[in-house]
Length: 149
Image 1 (cartoon, rainbow, N blue to C red):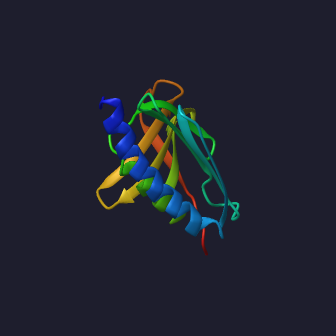
Image 2 (tube, helix red, strand yellow):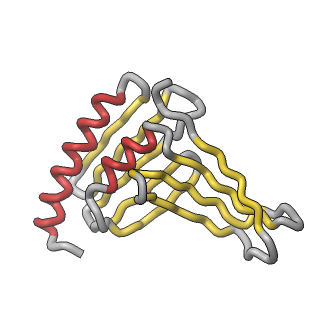
């Protein structure tokens, strides 16, 4: 963890970058931003129904939570500040996908992952396990559309 003043300084520049992205994206998404001393929150609802909505919450305790479509990833440590503007741009560009993993024999859902390709070679992946995988697996991927078509 960083000292609080260093964290706030890095976060301030990051928020400037994200809010600049938000201004440019308002023509293709409803964007709501709220802030207080303890958090900064942005909710993005694209006008295109097949695009990926998301919500980002960055807290002063140096953790963040992210909701991508219906999947929620809470209390993750802030390790890189460049992650947040990259996430927004990649989701807007349609580089988000939902990956469902099933058992090949019983077709039982065992995991759901959300993957966002930030730049070539750098992906953000969140995963939720539902059951243990017993045997071979089958993955089904749903790719979200870009905000602009």
